[in-house]
Image (cartoon, rainbow, N blue to C red; front, side, top):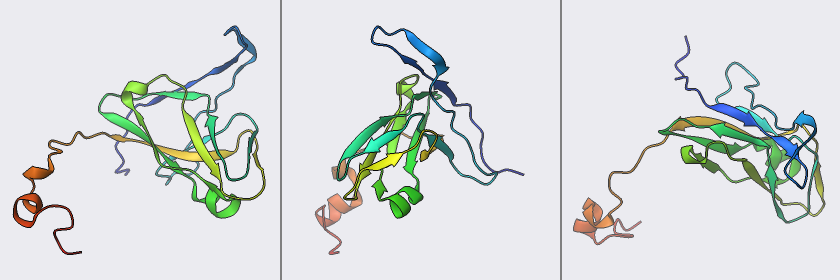
Length: 158
């Protein structure tokens, strides 16, 4: 029996368009996220077109996909460890808020090597998870025990 809570977070797959905004021949360009195994905690997302990542630069790659994220949730995009270990590509963790629903999602990829890296269409570049988003009740530091009794930042002597 699965202990994972299921929530509906639909993906929008976008069409490639010409300069005037008309749909190009060939239809949808985006690729649906997919769970590759039954035990996968996150769904993999792939790029739909070949991409060149110049050395020591960050390239923001359009995934040609968007999400209908339920209110009270967020989509967290994590790096795939194999991109860093095997290819030398670093990717930050990214948050996609529910009020960004329906928009093109992009993934920033940083090439840490001395050569241009080519990623092929269909290559998995990130993994995503739809999780609850919580609001913090109080961001005021002066209301904490540490601020009142110990003087605040660095007060534990560590």
